[in-house]
Image 1 (cartoon, rainbow, N blue to C red):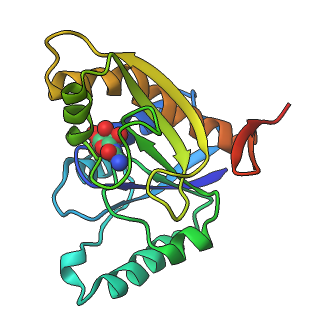
Image 2 (cartoon, rainbow, N blue to C red):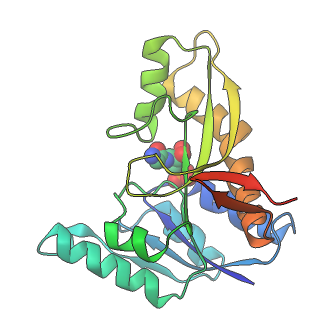
Amino acid sequence: MLRVVVCVSGGGTNLQAILDAIDAGKVTNAQVVAVISNNPGVKALTRAENHGIPGICISPKDYESRAVYNQALTDIISEQDPDLIVLAGFLVKIPEQMVAKFSNRIVNIHPSLIPAFCGVGYYGLKVHEKVLERGAKITGATVHFVNEGMDEGPIIAQKAVAVEDGDTPEVLQRRVMEQAEWILLPGAIDDIANGRIEVVDNKVRRIK
Ligand code: GAR
């Protein structure tokens, strides 16, 4: 059984999608053992609590420096003995020591088709604002392994979503979540939990 730690910062709809998929048997061989948030009082922590899963808040504001916070975050996550760390809307740059310790065991969901609309400054609603500003006709979501770069690790899965005339960032965000994120992320966890994918030469491939 894969021990999964989910890291969140806000609403936690992707966390909910993971929990629902596990409950429905669409994700097998995986259990969420803890939810980590960098923000206190967020809805994602309530979702964890409602599911009987320990929710832990670790905020940078409570630490004297980013370096001290980074080590504390790495330690708290390590204490959960995770096989997989899922960044489900976790808007904290993952510390280098954590990436090194959990190589190819951290996955992130990003609300665009990487390498478009990603990198520093592209997160949450901002991504959809930029897509609309640029007039792109297709967007989507990407699940990828996390490396030292920002949104640069090996891509596990992607799904395209249409941009429609009159979309607001909020409307587009919701469509990308419904049509892509809430499907892709549980699917990737299921693939990892059941040994269906591997990373070769910095690329993800399906094990035949
Ligand atoms: C999601 O759209 C996720 O893709 C995005 O934050 C949102 C969190 O929503 N993540 C990023 O932008 C990471 N760069 P949620 O809390 O409802 O799952």
